[in-house]
Amino acid sequence: MLNKILFKLYKYGVLKYFNFLRQVSINGKDFKIPILGNVGLTNLFLSEPWMIDLLKALLSIENKLFVDVGVNIGQTLLKLRSVSNDINYIGFEPNPLCVNYTAHLIEANGFINTSILPVAISEHTALGELNFFSKSSTDSAASIIDNFRPGQKIIKKEYIPVFDIDSISKSIDMKDVSILKIDVEGAELEVIKSFRSLIHDKNPFILMEILPAYHEDNNERIDKQNEIQAILNSLQYSIFRIKKQDEILEGVDEIEEIGVHSDLNACEYVMVPKQKKSRFLAAVNSL
Image (cartoon, rainbow, N blue to C red; front, top):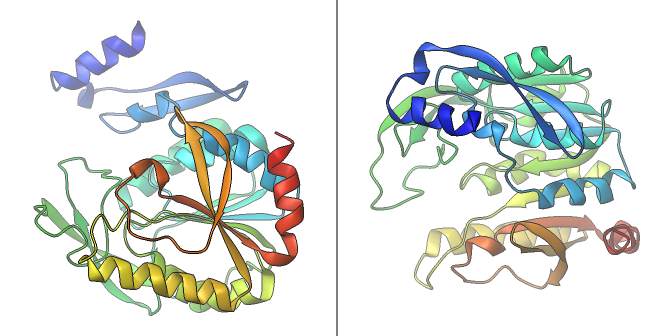
């Protein structure tokens, strides 16, 4: 009932005047969710519950460091902390409003071993642009890739810092990375290239969203996903598409190529080092 009232306040433009905490339960654990004006409301509702089961399977194999590229407002962080209180977590997020919100989320819940860096990841260190496609200041579809959504109007742009991971690794130790999550709205190839040496050396599991190409003449998206596949093949990785039914994990399917499709329910993947493949399948099948 209270959540319905909150959405009414949001709808009528009143919620932006309020800051407060609301408690929710995720995977049997209680969390305090900051509502900072209009920011944080979606964290009251669990999205992608399939990820919790997948995290349970992966963390049963390795659980030293979780690297989250594309934090937004901490949706994955909440799921991770519902499974593990103390695994080390490093998140990267270029949107300053999202960074501010996630810092409040971390403080409200007393999360330990949890750090957020206010940068995007790519191949080179530079000043970049973050393109927003909605009026939301925390637009989860915002992208650093020019023309990622042809024909869709860019509502606004913000200048952001973009770093290559080698520069960051000089100051922050990521040698124990166990899981690398990438949700970057079209910049997946740039992130993979930036992390390539670390992936080669440490063989983390990789959780990645790759949005569909939709049609055969979408050459830019197809070329990028083909290059991602080629890099992962060279690094001795197998690619699994995550199977879901009503947002519940059903299993995984090993695929040879991502291919051209238009199914938004089939755009999440887990990339598995071949030497860890049998343990991964056993862990998923035991859920």
